[in-house]
Amino acid sequence: MDFPPGFRFGTATAAYQVEGAVHEDGRADSIWDTFTRVPGAVANGDTGDVACDHYHRWREDLDLMAELGLESYRFSIAWPRVQPDGRGAVNPAGIDFYRRLVEGLAERGIEAVATLYHWDLPQALQDTGGWAARDTTERFAEYAALVADALGDGVAQWITHNEPWVVTFLGHVEGVMAPGVRDWPTALRVAHHLLLSHGRALEVLRERSSAPVGITLNLTPARPASTAEDDAVAARRLDGYFNRWFLDPVLTGAYPADLLERYREHVGPLDAVRDGDLEVIGAPIDFLGVNYYFPVAVRAAPGEGPLEARTAEPSPPLTAMGWPIDPAALHELLLRVRRDYGDIPIAITENGAAFEDPAPAEGVVEDPDRVAFLDGHLGAVARAAADGVDVRRYFAWSLLDNFEWHLGYAKRFGIVRVDYETQQRVPKRSALWYRDLIRISRAKR
Image (cartoon, rainbow, N blue to C red; front, side):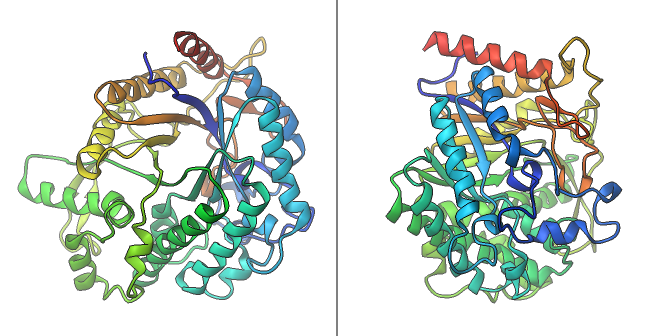
């Protein structure tokens, strides 16, 4: 595989999934701390209270990254650790943790890519309306300013939000993610305020830091399940739901007309939008983060919800999540983004898979399925680059096995195994494969 000059390889994590220490050094509850206490909300009653104990073991984890030759590390900053109530002064102990982390990355020659929001809204802000309240967009801009002032000289790239689709629809329609709301009109207000807060944070970061700024969207190719015209129309609707509802306002400054009409008809008017909002949301970004895991096949489903569409059962091969493995769809997706939205720089900010890993043997976990997954998807990225897509980063999800949200600790995405009882880290074969790929690619530069 050949990658463009300057291409960087890394891994990614998220604060609530790895840090633990949820009650230390002034950190307050997030909506995920609250959600995990709801009976039945998370598999096995698991919580992120300890997770991978990264808050205490970050030096060990950074050393491991250096041993693997990683060039870039995407992490998220826990808002309730930095600003416990979501407003007011910065918590010195909280921001100092991230300062040490950024400095430790620099000492090891690893680029720091910081995500401001990976789903852990301070519970204090949820209590006053959460993302459904417009005021939260102002609070987010203030939080972005605090972080930029404290870390701006050490962060190589900023990401405002991770996967606003998940926050919107899994958190506020299906209710399977925090805060566990099930209401379509609320969800559409949440989506707009997330995007508006992205635009406001973009302004703040540009004022206080010279590092490039982007947003990460999870994009899912939606294909008709058959040649029937109804399925094609339904697939177009789900493409809007998964992809265009967020891509269009960020990259074109307008919501997609077909989805606006459908939501007006089946949910109600988009009452959160005010004059000037879309200009803020559509301000040019420096790069687009793309999280890709799998495509979906779509069937028409008359009468089923606002979209009247459903996803078909996927065909093997599947991951342990039941997700289809389709590297070609990543290549297709990257070409589609360039075709529809222009030559914007792209970072693959998450890509990975959960499998049923065996126990460690002789100091390594053999995970051939994950090796094949990474090989296929990195090959798709290389082909997209050869076809003219300006793709500059790849972050494997994830560095460590971790707290997998509502699934608790049942699914393992890491290229490094974590024993949750002892916190021992054991590299998987995929980590060693990735190390060798990075070494070979670097030698070609």
